[in-house]
Length: 194
Image (cartoon, rainbow, N blue to C red; front, side, top):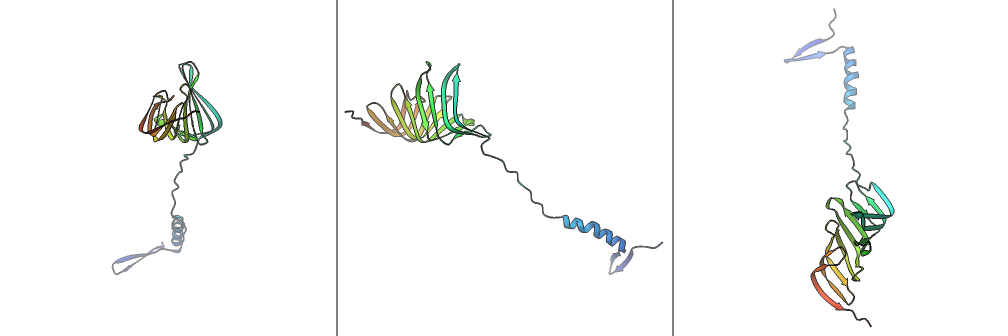
């Protein structure tokens, strides 16, 4: 029997000298394994945070006790995975009284609905009109809370009544502007009607 490995001793170490067949076998197995050991990049999955739904020229109706209480009109709406909605081209809202008549309106250049807080935010040129009292609120930012039927802002406000213009900073009010309080009143101007 022929021994295919010769063991050599040299200064306390053992060296193996493989045969040609074993050398080829090692080269055919080990070299491809070493060459295939490349750095692999882990690809992070990107989470889509854009709108899942978009619509144009929309009209939404909200009702309580089988009566329409709010109508929302917008040129464009984007809805997101978490239920939030954006109205980038503006919004117009009508609030209805118990008799079905429009009591007030709200309009804004841009609006956002945050579902987790059940809160609306209007931005840009924001106007609220009370149809019964013929009063108009103007501000640059306004929050509407449908559950409590309240609106508020901490921005500069102007309220135009039939005979005067009231201005100040901050406002708490009913959504129909039937009752309101300017948090920091700054002045009142009488309107001269000739």
